Image (cartoon, rainbow, N blue to C red; front, side):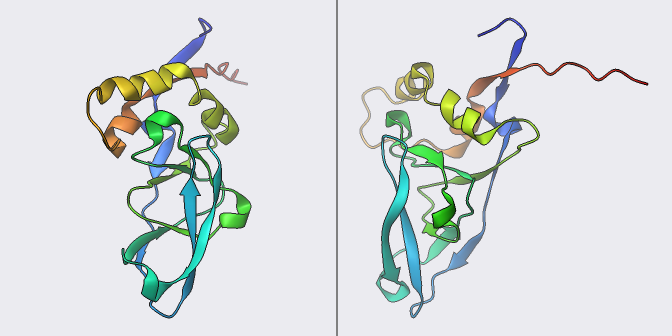
Length: 153
């Protein structure tokens, strides 16, 4: 990390989006899958009557998403445009990104660092199927370049 960069917790650049709603039985919904290589894709389109978890979250493109179970292995990324309006369960938290503080692609890039994976894996040594909850995720500190101060006129 360069000396003029500062470390800040993710909680300073991410705000959890909680647009939860109840699934309607006669509506068809897009469901998302988050793979360990960071790809976010359509898992399937499913009738609401066949969806077991009735409380879900609607996502927007550009939001950050991660899988609570797969985060230490790289299951996170940015919601693509074609999945705007898709749904996810509570095991895939989604976050709005403060683009005044960080560029979304930079956030996604910096989180692919091996130190990040090591951080989460160290929290769950010897435990199978451990979920990374939001407080732990948001406590992770990431490097950001310091912006030059504005000159006053």
